[in-house]
Image (cartoon, rainbow, N blue to C red; front, side, top):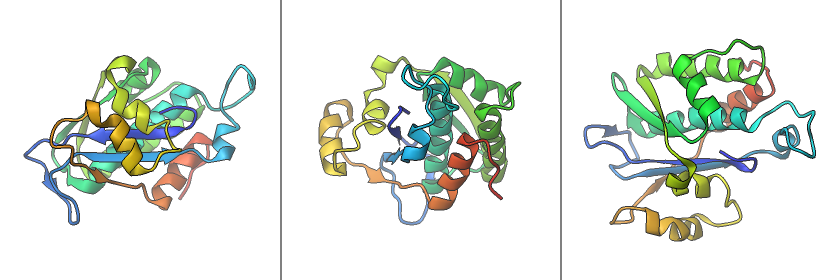
Amino acid sequence: ASGKGAGGIWFPAPQLNPRQGYSQKPVVWRFEWPQHIIDKLVTSENPSGTISNSDLELAGGLIHLEALAQTFDVRERTLLSKTDNLNTLFWQRKGSATTEKVPSHLLRLFGIHQRYHRYVSRHDYIPGESNPLADGLSRDFNLTWDEQMEVLAPHLPTPREYQIWTPTEEFMDAILGALLRKRVP
């Protein structure tokens, strides 16, 4: 994730069964943060913001798991997701935060998501320079999907096939609500 948005790619294991309308191809996704979220980001120009970059990374991690859960049957599976943000990594591994700030709201959604979809999540670190796919997908919103995938082509396995997943408005309302520290029913 970045201050502009979030994005990612899943390379599904062969034993995962695609849901209807999807196939055994990598899944790409991206979401551009609305301006009211960007306006609350803590920056040198906005030190009194209420949303940190780590909060956005944590939100991106949950959207990433939703992308896989909506495109493949993940019941009774262990899912490995990687991040280049250490705060996010430790919150995800612990599954809780000793704060009333944004992470506690997002981690509540993580728990609900994991129980609902019946998977076990594991989280690991990947250095940012080793993660050009997610970086590009979370920053280059001025590009069309075709342009974006052309830019990322040198980092993709051959054949360069992929499928696009877009988060639902309902799911994103829950994520955006958590970023604002509100519970959405």
